[in-house]
Structures are given as C-alpha cells and as structure tokens.
Image (tube, rainbow, N blue to C red; front, side):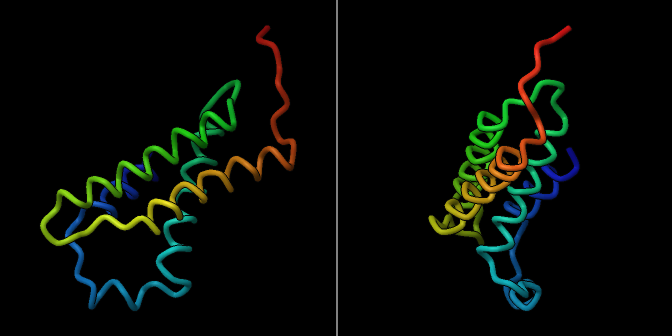
Length: 109
C-alpha cells in the first residue's frame, strides 16, 4: 500500500508550484490518471478473487476524496479536472484487466 501512501502524501503535502510544475513532463492530468491507474492495478492484484469494477469504483472514490481533502489545506485547491483524471485513471486500470481477460471469475475451492 505504499502506492496509496504516495498518492495521499502527494495530494495533501504543501505544494511549491515553482519546483513541482517543471516535473510534469506530460501534464498534471496524465500524472493523476497514471497514479490512479497504478492504484487500481495494485488493488486488483492484492485480491484473491478480484472484483475489477468495484475496485475501480473504490479507487475512483479515493481519488475524488483526495481532491476534496486538498480544499482543506491552506496552499492547495480542489480541481474538478484532477478528480476526473483520478476517476478515469482508475477506470483505465480496471479496463486493462477486463479487456485482457487477466482474471476470469473463479469459484472458491
């Protein structure tokens, strides 16, 4: 769950935009989407009998909640585009597994 910790700290840590902005090679939207894509993938791998879409919904809710928490910090602001990127990244992570058919429903033995 280190990935989740990185996402939480990255969401609520004080932002020094002069140092952070140049690090966004592909842009803020892609950074958010990639973070929640990764979170969804890791959460799916952590399950014995994964519920892919439920996992994506949970990861998306976490992403939206993190954006909401940014509104409570003194130097960060909540952005709808970031919340959307988080949710889309989570959906993309689930879609990857769903399209690839990596996990087929299996009955517990």
